[in-house]
Image 1 (cartoon, helix red, strand yellow):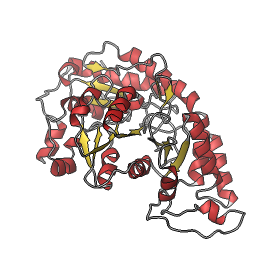
Image 2 (image 1 turned 120 degrees about the vertical axis):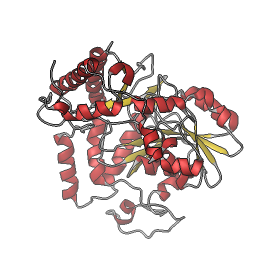
Image 3 (image 1 turned 180 degrees about the horizontal axis):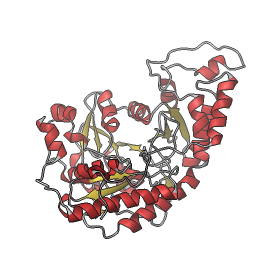
Length: 416
């Protein structure tokens, strides 16, 4: 048996495999250089072209580029009329931005537990969380698998609620023949550095014909009635007027230069991630103490393959999740945790009175999941190294289990 690098053995690879490393091609580099040489680097023609291309890709009537998905969610809530005293139903198993923007508009996030198989919000629990103050439902397509949008839309219609989708993981996702981005009034996408397509930082908000497009377009840039391209383009300077106080949330043409080519290669890159996913599934099938993702493409529903999450069951595997992550790091394999459920974070505990035991399914997932590297930038050798490292660690702890006293990270943080 090979000695773990954590205990002085040789790592499976000599260099560190960064989790979520983006694939940047020569096309992006050339486009960025072209933008820099053009003299126009802020919001302008390339951002507008990127919006048009993304709207066409998602089958959405409208798309507005943003500096982040957080900005997109924030403006979607404002466009939907969510404000102080309102409640928004969402999932605790998500990145903090999903709930942060609800707080930013003065509303309260109301968490609903998730399904164990999909990790998405459990639609069977949504209606019991609705109160007279509920204004919207904010589902998150976790890891790239779509929520049950038919059921969510039906609930929203019965109760007069707005649906705002967090599709930060779901640029390529389809749900029952409909492209995510074309289903609800508002859908927010992320182009952060680790996402399936990236503009380094950035996001997009797609909207239906019924959404508050003109208002959000103005709010994205200080609430002005004209953006910079309209004010300073070759037609000559045009005066502008503040319609209402807004934010500085626009994308730049430097970012859009990357996005144009990232979007053009998105479908081809998905095929690469699908191959890595299948290799992981085959390698880890039957591995004691490990559960692989349990959702599969079917019919006209497609997974975006953003995160490949293993669940490490400590008693069967031989060590807990954090020991496994440390061992992976020593083997020069990066990883991530997606996510520590939001109701266990200090701000929500103190402001909303939440705590362990409130959402047991999300907690069980949050305590045990590890996201493995999954990127179109990975080579076949990279994939082999990840598999080799996981199997090496599993073999070691199967033969040399460590004491697992039932200690949980979230409980440790709460006591700190």
